[in-house]
Amino acid sequence: MTTQGMTAAEKIRAKAARAKQHQEQTEPDSARPVPSAAAPHVKPIRSTVDLLPVKHASFKAWCGETAVMIGRARVTTQDVIRVLVDRLLTDETLARKVRDDLRKQ
Image (spheres, rainbow, N blue to C red):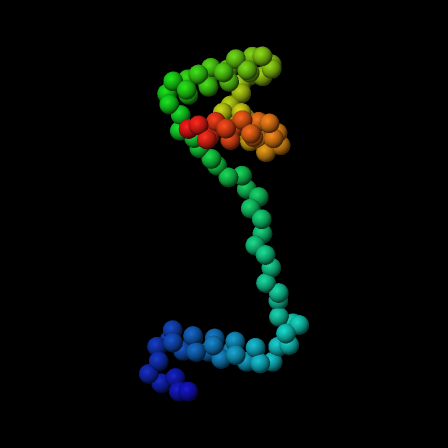
């Protein structure tokens, strides 16, 4: 194949294709890397929820009261959601109640 009349980009692509073909012909299968599974996602994933203003105010008040009751400076929405998700995933009674509430919506 002649490279006359080819752009620089076309020449580079052609050279890369030839190199890959040569490598595939000379490299034994055992030397080729085995594709691995994607690494698991470890960075926390943000979730948000939209609440009616009255429910938001009530929830914030509950967080404030709870902070006082458990002796903390504050309890955040994030604190509560994390605990609720953990409970939901481990407490079948709570999970059943949540499913029932979801059916009623």
